[in-house]
Image (cartoon, rainbow, N blue to C red; front, side):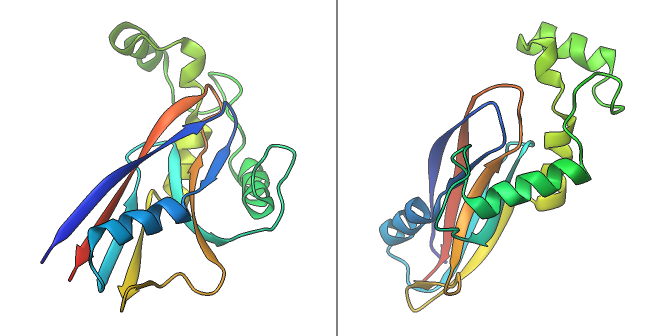
Length: 165
C-alpha cells in the first residue's frame, strides 16, 4: 500500500495560536496521487493539538477564528494558564534546572503546564478518510493546528501522511 508524507511548517505567537491548515493538507493529498485511503495529520509537539472544526467567517482581535478563540477561552477556564511554578506539580525545580542546562531554556519557558494538559485533552492528531479523491471533512469541516504554549513564539511542524491507493 503506497504511503506519502510531507511536513507543513507554521509560526506560532506567544499566546494560543491556531492555523487553518486545510489548504496545505489538501495540497499534500493532491501531490500524493492517491484517491482512496486515509490522511493522518499529526504534530509531535507536546503543547499543540490538531482538531477538525468549522470555519467561523470571522476572527477575534487575536487573529484566531472565532470558534477557535471560543475553544481557547473555554480551555483557559478548564485548565488555567500556568502563571507560577507552584500552580501545578510540573515543572519542578529539577526540570527547570535540566531544561536550562541541557536545552538552554529560560526558566519562564517551563511555565507551560497548561499547554501540555490542553494538548492531552484535545489530541495531537486526526485521521480523515478519503473516498474517490474526496477528503471526508463534511460540509463545514476545517483542519486546525493549535499551539497552546503561551511562553514564547515558536516554529512548529505538522506531519501529513497519506496512505491508500
